Length: 173
Image (cartoon, rainbow, N blue to C red; front, side, top):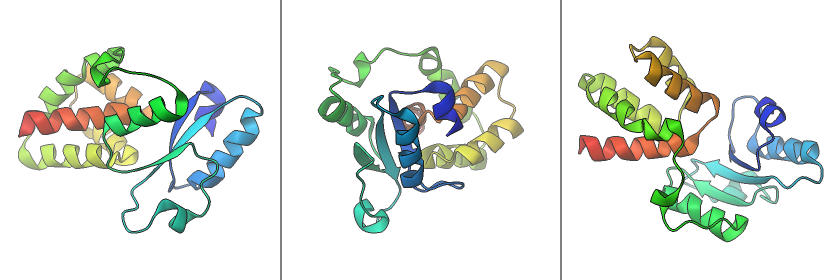
């Protein structure tokens, strides 16, 4: 809720299960705060066994539902089909400074010992923000990479984490 109040985003990727408040309740509160401003909220869930509608009820507050893990192309399809944004491909997206430096993070994580490398990859794949925050605080990341990772965690930048996870898989295979 605080992030919405501070940033007033146009699009929100929201996990359905969160520690303090469920995604459905949070979406309803954001809709109330937004008033007549359009805010597209995309639900994200790791539910594999039941449909989100069956597990959580009506999903009317959400533009779409994505099941984790998902591909960037799935998200781009939603942006295209439901929001009206068009991209030739994921490579045509403008790169933020943080995304341009992703290669340095991949290189640093790839250089870790196997158990630590595996731990980083798992936390990134699961998009476990709390675990990643702890790992960044305890790590020996160079300051520039630490700031980049902390920024992505603070913004709950799932696209950054998904792309970082994909980059890591390519680098480690």
